[in-house]
Image 1: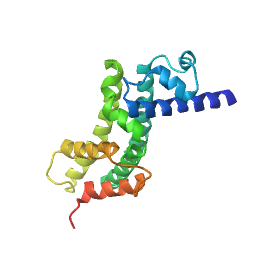
Image 2: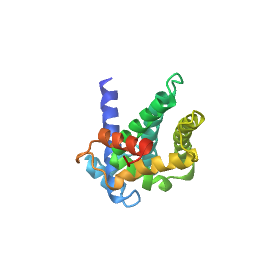
Image 3: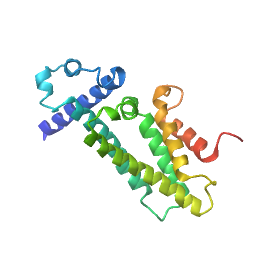
Image 4: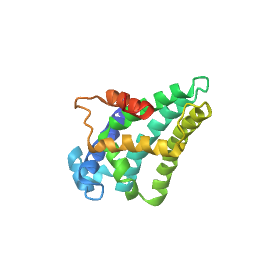
Length: 195
């Protein structure tokens, strides 16, 4: 059991280090040798943990997207709660989650196309599930007359763009925490900026 926990910790360290290096230098510009050195490993011992650089990028992004997806689908599953309440929880979680891990967000935005097509497709399908959740909530709001007259997909893409672009400017150790940023995004997305 101790060995498994240590192995998991080592794998997490590998993923975190690789995410940081890939985000800073670019996926293609980062060598497995650099990654091994950053971890204090030899290049050959690095392959004990991972089969290829492509697989490593896939595993980093798949676990990131999947963790968020499980949480999101759980948040909105309770149909007894009104759609605006579920939308609030979706927005706050999504913004907090994605703004809170800059290296992985950089990879999601910039390096998805670096993956082999079949691996990329797995992640694109999961991203479509995010889209389906958000447009579904917006459709529920439209039915109740709470959503302005606009296509749900346009509103959803505007939200995702707002959050995904934070990697360019947001710093978790800056004046606003990821939770505070999530509150600001909720206000902007659901009420606008004008008094």
